[in-house]
Length: 159
Image (cartoon, rainbow, N blue to C red; front, side, top):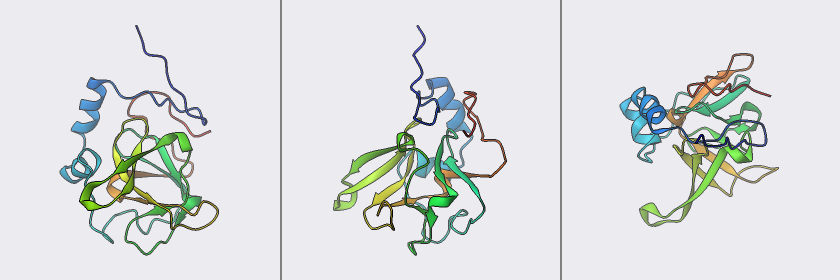
């Protein structure tokens, strides 16, 4: 029996990858990408390749390609990591309580593949007052007009 697709409000299939799909996707990761995405690591501040990216486009999950953030919501936080004040679609980013390192934070994960993206803090700009502090290595940037990657072959396209 095939599992029914769970769709986000923007029409993306959020059904988790199968075991075989996950193995294939994880096999394409670099050691640093695997450390951050799969083992909840953090890249060094001010080192990420997407920190200075200012082009129009979408920031998607490096593992499964799900769009997570729009360029319009990116802002300079001064923290050393790409920061956004809102997700592409609320359904695409999962919040998980994180009590590691003796503090309470809210971890952000991709809602489709459950990969670690970063954390969200309540110190961002209007209109949300949120700061999604995301590892560059967790994301892949797709310039406006370019097709989305579709590593799960689900027909992912921007609305």
